[in-house]
Image (cartoon, rainbow, N blue to C red):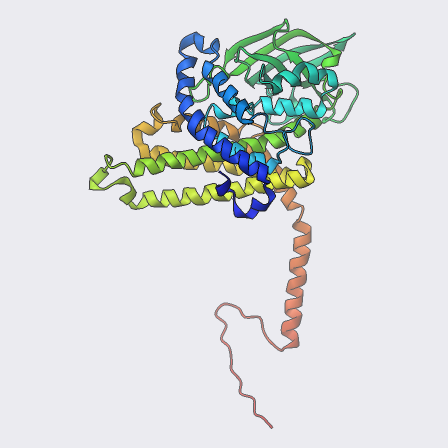
Length: 454
């Protein structure tokens, strides 16, 4: 809620955003979290899980639209379709949405649609916006983002192999994709696909392109839906697909051939911040569940309530510190994006992308431990939260890629700091010499000399 906005950034949050933040918090707490159980029940079991569209989502969407909680994610100043909130302001709202499985979709702020809408809003032409952006923003369809491939190390996007070859007035796509999140949803109408057009460019970062592919295009086969630690995430799902001579009009190319890297960097930057803030919300909810558990009077191992065991209060304290520290890091990245753009915030975004999921996994694991056997089964939301967030250490680039990039960037200061330190050491030696002093070393005995006065 507005009262929980960190003091350090409170002056950057508009009165309008504060009002919306209170509405979002109330909507999530009173409508979405209770509806999560209904969503699970309506999804059902067996193959029907991939065919059903839970009615509760439409009910929540209607309520969200009535409250004005719709498409909140498009940042102010960057998109004409924006509702007028900054990355910072939306980040605070996204934190609340992260507490519930249904909240983001209810407000039409769910991945991968958010990233795909940003691509269309920022890079799409008028015809592409009319055909795809408008129905996405109206919540009438859903979409998937297809980049990762099973046969190559997709952490290096230069390895992407799906071919996109021009033949006359069409592009022909051949290859396979997996971890195509959203591909299982029967409402998924659009695939935003990254592949290799190649061309004559020798620049490995100018050989990839992004093309829009209707999901019902002939030649596309969904072979299977991948599970995450045994959870299938139906009906959203994560698909393994093949494209065999899939043909789309050349008008479906986004921005132009060879612009793929430019597009995905513009897409993934804001998306990582959204993921991070939702993840902080999940960590907050895990801490809430842990507090409920340790204060349960019916749970008294070894004759004491859980909160009376010394390690438990340390878990609570460390969780509070880690959540608050992570939030500051993410909000700083959001502010940098607002003031200087996503490119200027790359380091801050990478820091958040690495730190926040690991923090949340630690907090959730403590809550699981407090619940014992109940923590690893379906009786609490903790196990599913942990499995979902564990994927974020891989999604949008694995931690190791970001750490390597951050390390190289930080190491650029090596020469300058070496020069500065050596200059400081030389000046220290000069100052000691001018005063007739010796540099103190461990174990050195100081001889006190009494000087007579004339």
